[in-house]
Image (cartoon, rainbow, N blue to C red; front, side, top):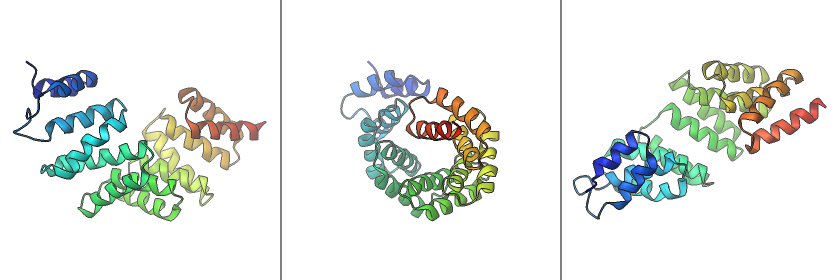
Length: 224
């Protein structure tokens, strides 16, 4: 007879589909000593498999009812990410705001807030949140890349854009998202050879990414 611990072992070993099979087969009340443990691991497993819609319901259970504060904070952050990935950016923003108001201020939370703010064209809030993220963790590559991209995309400060995007790429080489931002910086700086070379590599790595394809078309067409 399978038990919760079997599902947790599968999850910890990276076998997320097997973890789901075990956890979903457990009878009601199997987690009576820890009522939200099954929901917690189901939510995490679905997120690992990029099945965000399936994850949301379980993560919401933990966030709204669990008394384990550390687990609630973790799930609130993951829930915000899942909302973002399913196009519910306002709900994501709400969850992140709840974290900040509860005193859970981290570089990751502020970087996520910045990303959502920029999606909603609130440039100043996005910059402010990325700066707060970097104040907490100066080596946070997500914030470095995001801030650099905004400075380039809005033509606010191309020199700062280059500094931040190069830092992100230096700390996390061969990250296609960061490479895309740097290619965009080169494009804005009118360095066509560098931009074309980099965006071509990025397109090979992320051939279906909408933003990458937009950048690729503009950079290549501009070059031609």
